[in-house]
Image (cartoon, rainbow, N blue to C red; front, side, top):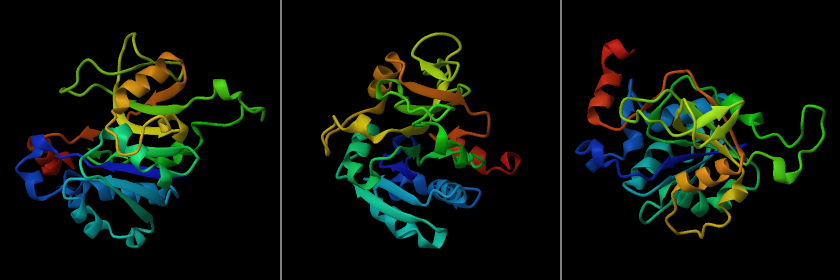
Length: 235
């Protein structure tokens, strides 16, 4: 399995820090956010990693290099301007191959997420070894978290590991998901495309599974959040 880390965002709310440092390189507990992901992926045996970037992307490449010092093989997908999440996948499609891949935003902090669990969430066969008909296979699997203060209404419901667009309670998408790459084939490389509308369409068709992740998770969106994570009490 391959992984993609989204690292193309500008991080406007993190200015002035992100004027000179790409958001995924901001450090929590002495380690850049994106390095936490790389190490956790490698720990789970997921060593082929694709990283897209735009704003100050050269600094990301300089910091991570080819990934060998982390035990990874990193390929980069540069963007002139950030193409949004689905657009970023379409641009990097040739690097991701044809098998399901896991993707995570480079600006979230979830130090204990175990990527081992993502490897079998999109099975090709049922428990008896019978292949799933193509029209019945899940096309994506999303991890959800408790709604943070900045997003109290949530995004999706979950019913027996199948996601819904409505219902109660609604949980927040953790920006960690496993995707079959063919769902992005209709997006022209180089075009801007958001992931949310695509996911809602697939969820409406009953083709997306998911579960709630209960571990530590923070979407590092403001300077205050970064400072709070780095205070001794947060450790």
